[in-house]
Amino acid sequence: MAKTDLGKKWEDVFEKSWTSDFPDSFIFRLKDQMSGYLETSQNPCDYICFENKHLFLVECKTHKGLSIPFTAIPQYDRLLKYKDKKDVLAGCIIWFSEKDSIIWVDINAMEQMVNDGEKSIGLRMLKNKSYNIIEIPFEKKRVYLFPDCKFLVDKLTN
Picture 1 (cartoon, rainbow, N blue to C red):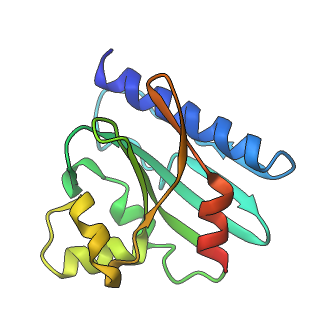
Picture 2: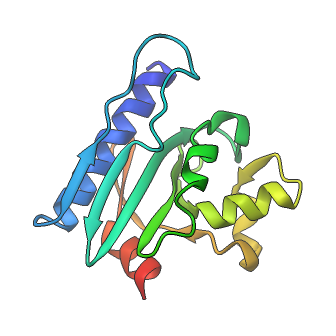
């Protein structure tokens, strides 16, 4: 399976998980601009979700290995615009496909990492409590991990 197929399927898995966990909530998939140029799309994220008085701006990433470089997250600069907005929670949900791990990294943590000189987001950072990375429980169905979106929302909003 090509990398883009794996990533697109991961986006579908996230959407199914969100819809299953919050059947009455709002979720909207922003369309990718498929011109072939990475920098063409100006979308801040993949999904806009609304649940429990909070707006979530969710960028879905999948990556093999233990860390994903910031260069693979061009949405970082666009998500930064929303970091201080009341009741807006912006960040990346990252599936480390070879490690059976899903994490949430909010935009504030990403900004702190960049300011600390980090070049990537890695599973090793789970030990650094100052970044407040959330490891998300999941249900594995064949290849894909279906994240527990209720757990994530509870962690972010309580």
